[in-house]
Image (tube, rainbow, N blue to C red; front, side):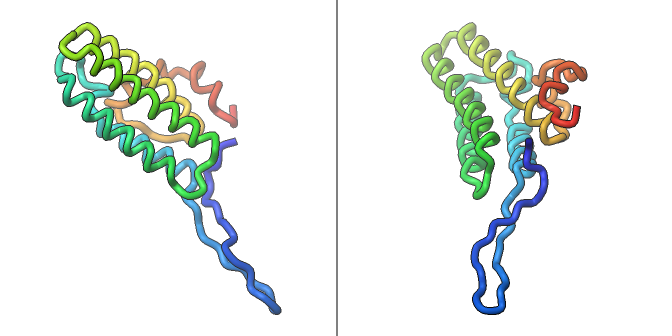
Amino acid sequence: MANKAKRVRITGVSTALGGSQWEYLTSDAEIARRVIRALEDHRMLWMPMAMEAPAYAIGSASNARKALTQEMMTEGISRDLEVQLQQIRKLFMNFMTAAEAGFGSEIKFVEALTILRTAVGERLAALVAVYKLDVDDDLRSIIPDSGAWFFQEFDPDA
């Protein structure tokens, strides 16, 4: 089950009369929302292929990986969400490796970018469905058919 509410972690307990100290942890839903917002800014995921330059796309993929790593280090992130973000980060690394290996070959670049967009779109669909997040129209274009059949698999309330 996805963690959608603010979480609290006990950080200390008082003596004699009782009492406790705590801190609020960022919810998984908030972390997922920040990931979606960050990826909306990476046009390599949704711009027409003809408008993408390999060097720019590789740099953008590197920045996306760094942003995902930062979110994965959020205190209190659930193991499930961390694994999902690791998978997305790995997709960006695979894209970088393939695009760099085929540098100069437009066919290899388009193939690598197509694989990245498809796989990231599938994983974003799971995040959007589980945490009930909005996605801008550009990034939504890489999410598989948003018909109910796809999202039912990820919706714990369905």
